Image (tube, rainbow, N blue to C red):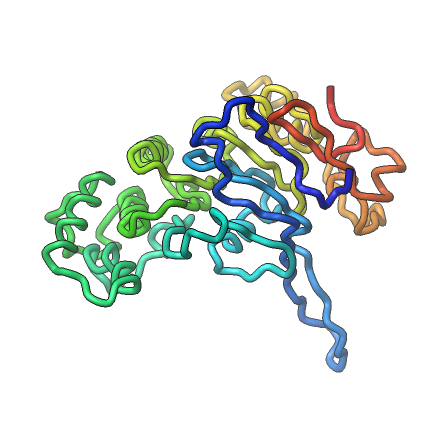
Length: 333
């Protein structure tokens, strides 16, 4: 099978509303130019942040995206919402029926994402100003009150500024701002990583409640695998800008097919000091140290199962089950 072909993930005998593909990404790549270190050099260098990424997101479901820092998670999310332009490939959202305004973004740092000069009321209602020529004041206030109550904010505090709220409350403001336009798709980029542990569960449960109430389709990015396991229906694993595994969340976590996925799961911290002292970490070795070619497997530099074949080409997709695929020459059994 060609590596660039998108694997079929969801092959259910009986199709339901949740089996409708809402977002389809086919062979998408994103490259950034790198400034030359030579003063008079005219040759441009490029860094491939994403390479031949293909994925599908089911309507009303949550797709979790995991991977190490620098694996391309945020780049993928920002490309889907249009903040970054792809270098190649296609992004199709509901057969191009859904306009951009129906896709909203929840950022990682809630306070940095909010304009400090605007009140909470202005922050939440601002997206409506860009989408509607004239807004009825009474109707907008009704929507404001409703969405603030739904995310757990006091309507009487609408004239306050973002810096007067806690981090968890600021993230609720960000979620309310995203939800005010009644989006169909909500992309959450590490939405709780900057929050205290005590409020993370509250924000995650809020997202699940909003999804259930409005039929939202969520794309959830996190480095905390326990959160992804809790909230996601499906999952993709990114390694150096390439998708190496994708499928049903429960299946991927219980039977990881790629050595990289297995290493991520085993790297999860455990509340056991004795276990942590004896833990074996995945080796760190760069492509430059091993002189690995660009066409090699994305994980070849650290894989214990590496063979000569892994250094010569990108692996083909292997179907482990009707809801689980892995890009590996020697998938785990």
